[in-house]
Image 1 (cartoon, rainbow, N blue to C red):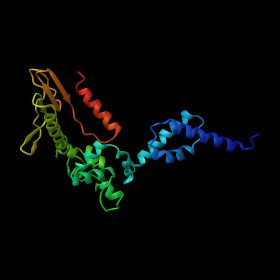
Image 2 (cartoon, rainbow, N blue to C red):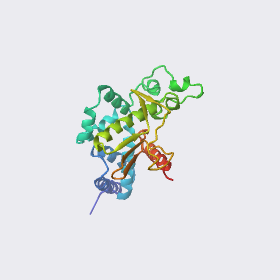
Image 3 (tube, rainbow, N blue to C red):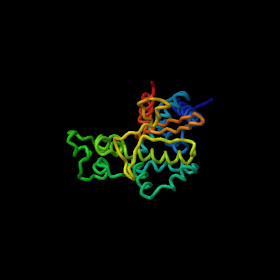
Image 4 (cartoon, helix red, strand yellow):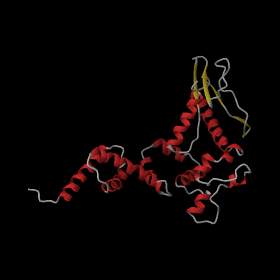
Length: 256
């Protein structure tokens, strides 16, 4: 005869459900299992499916919390087995590596960080937007704003275009080296010496192949084999929504 109280029986069954769900859900990172289990144990779930759903929600919340300064370092152990990623990191300059790490940790001295995190007596608004006569109400200068959504950097200073086109030049050199001389590589970017020329577009699809006003960012053409590779480059903010929006925007451009 089981003399345990109903509350004890419930908690015993509840723990079994949580353990089964954790064991069944392969997407739960081992480093987060303890924290996820604690978070889920505080809720009342009765089935494994419901527990899996709560586990996924708790894991998403844990990953969102890692966006705070320094916490992304907890995920660095996942990169130990990735040799290609390690080679990429080792090939970066000290300045680029420092910028990448500080941006991941949200430690770059943007106005919002200086104001809210470091308690500096500065405005949290974007200085570039404030200086522009076109924008009266300047948005907050977050890392997201600086790297991908500042209209002044986009339209007046060409910062995003400079970043985009430099990646295109690097890809062109890589494709030229990899594919060989049989392929004609064209990019929609122009450079005068070491200076990128803006607002001067290049047709990347020859008219004898296809008369069109579309200008893919990069094309690779092998006329002997009658093959053409078309590539569009985008540099969105690092989020699922930004990637999906960019993919949809690029796909719609060539949907006709």
